[in-house]
Length: 484
Image (cartoon, rainbow, N blue to C red; front, side, top):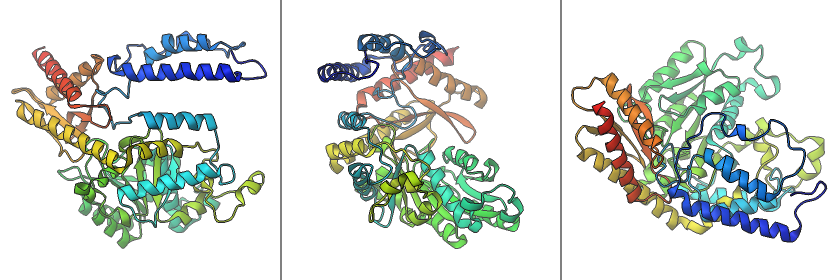
């Protein structure tokens, strides 16, 4: 129990740290035996707790009992080796320990003076990641929590470059003066684009979804026509979002061609390489980032294929001066800490003032794995995805519905004589049944108006054995449900 005016004593703290360390180690050792999806109803977890703040403190014995009895039954095991939904966000020992140390230090990385080590280590790991994915040194990096927040900051900079002095004068009442600012992204790009448009006051309807080609890449000709049409209608093309590793299929937009269009029209180019950027570490796959060096901003998520636990997203920009001009603001109470010369104060490059020491877990992961370790794990994930695709192609009535470019596989089960509508419903039911089993997890997506199943390999614990089990489970449920 925490005393009213104090904390744990030194020896009690040491004992509780050992207890929590054992709990974490036991959790990691038993994660494969746990059901991936909890069997709780909405409100069931909250019902165990009072709606009023506790009056008296509780002992750690009580807290740990409640953790096991009430909280853990409602946890989805994202770290399970058969969790193949979304993109992998894998935990690992070195990064987990780094996160624990960062929590103990509890520093605020808003300025250099408030934590020199946190600020400088952030610059170090950002430089490492920039080198790993092949971006030039002219790109400055900033750590945010997620790619959606990084994109919002990039589009805020693009908005400022329209010449409207939005930082000072705002958008309200200036519709005729400014005209609608248009941003372009493929129909496969992440939904964070819409949210950024909403948050920045640009309007969801001013995000133009550009048709993708047969390989689910942005069609550049359609992009050019959309820009020309908007110019003719008096609108203001502002930015283009190209994607390296789209959410559904991991497709790669033709970034170099898109960069040429942006250059011709004076548009900001943002490259969302949140998932696919680290693939460029492999010498045989460096081409996935071709053209990214021409962008104004690039996102790479450490918590996807760099094996850094949530959350860690790096925004790189060649136009750091513009980003700073939008967000730099030093109130009087920070002038003493923000005045050091020749240093970076990361608070100047975003809406956040308080900033976690995210760089420490990135440093522990990158130091522990090294380039060789990262490359070998990414290469293995690619191998597993290609192997899974081979199993699908050998099985009657199954088909691959998108090129396997990274470690994502989209596929369809289509029994003979079944209508497209019934087939789509069946594929969705297969995903639901597999996930309900508790020992495997996948997702579905819509491609070319068809409902397809999807897996993503990204966990350092996932092996061929786990994939084989998931494939067996899919075929088993497909056979059972197609008989109904």
